[in-house]
Length: 178
Image (tube, rainbow, N blue to C red; front, side, top):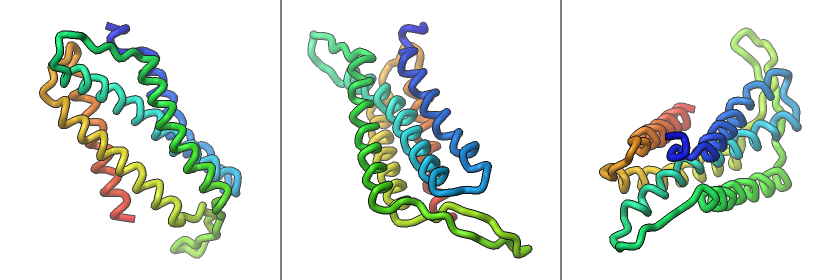
């Protein structure tokens, strides 16, 4: 059971989730340029690792399910990790350009009680990353639709699909409400 679940890929998913959730710890003290930059990098790399690994697991199921030949296709975890490296590389390249061209800025906001609050300012780069994430999640939804009837020994594709759908819908809701 453990081997079929791809423990290496599961560890990568956990590492990505750790990166995403560590952004709240990074911003606990007053934000500055370094913490704002770290928040962006950890969030995006964590997203790429977690959802990239989930989508590549789904992609492997879709490739195996679609094959009509007598020859079995074998996609190993190493093959998935190489592809995940490309996905993370694209995110890192975008982050590198973003950090060089337009480093994050700390602004001072005011609460309703006129208290100061230091905040990392959002700009069009943040919206660009949101669009990149949406496109990535749309690819994931396409994969989920392709594997929805695929027989799976442990039926993990169903749960991966629910995860991708939830992230997509929550991202849309949160970005529209902001």
